[in-house]
Length: 405
Figure 1 (cartoon, helix red, strand yellow):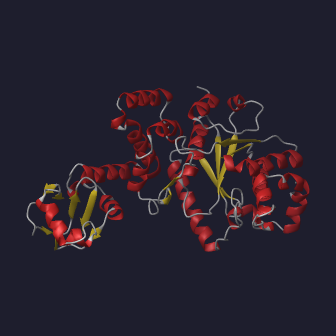
Figure 2 (tube, one colour):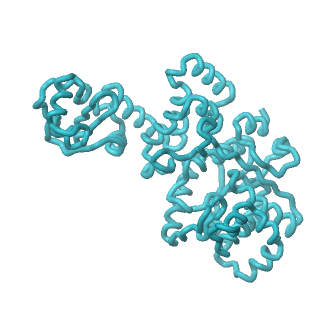
Figure 3 (tube, rainbow, N blue to C red):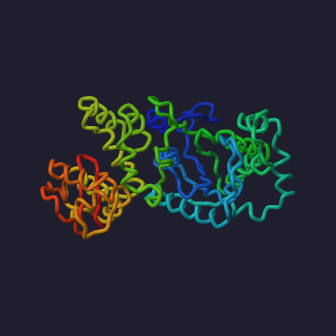
């Protein structure tokens, strides 16, 4: 399968500057992809273009992964209705380190180079930038962008000169990497099309060179029409301290059936034959949730590693198959503590249920016990006075839990 065929069946191809998408099959190129340190971590929204990059790498493309130390100081205004709050330099440095660490995990085993655009902007003078970039950029073109029209039009919140200039800064990134690293392709999400094309135009006007852009589409849940990437609790982060591996796994496990069919080719490295077989297996028995389980397994393994995946699976077994806490792998107890109520040890089952807010009072707790609706470490509780020492998992019904720590 050619690269263009691979990307097409997986659903990665959106906008591009090539005359024909099959042009990407003719030669291996050097490309770059950038992430600004505007947040403390990448999200699963970033993970979609990252997966496309994995396929480019597999087809011999050379990867440059940029972390936007300079652009992060300004903030990308595209798609934003209001001016961004500036991050402190300390926040930017911390966020940059987190992104670089995630590059290392997501692209483990692959060859790539990490660059920071602050390195080439820190010594550039304002007048030099205006002469080299400003004189080669059309104001008409910038003002014609839809989000600019919305920001400066009637009822808009306006836009600062700094955010207005963001487009030029990102465009210069492409020019610099073209000159210094031989990059002739920028990969980006659909929302970065305008910024990316500016780089193509600068390369043509200043260097007389040819460069291209390839963007991935925004991923939309067809059933809801909602942009993919967030849960009810907010963004789904790749950082395990912001979205625990257990919660990360559950997010993928809970996507609807039809959406899972779309997500499996995008967010996993499974080949077409395997995906087709999984979809057929799912359609024959949807209640088994084969697609969601495989999707959750593959993405969690990619982002958090095999050990954390197995830890998550052990935690699920303890919760939903009445396993023992002794079966938890490393990190499992922390996952539990982050997801369910925790009370101090050396108490009674009744007191633990009340303290955790599972019941309104001791009377309700006793009735649940007498009715056979409470388990302690997988065993049904029959004694109203039963104790709950440390490392006890109390289960009420099918999906209410208390951890006695």
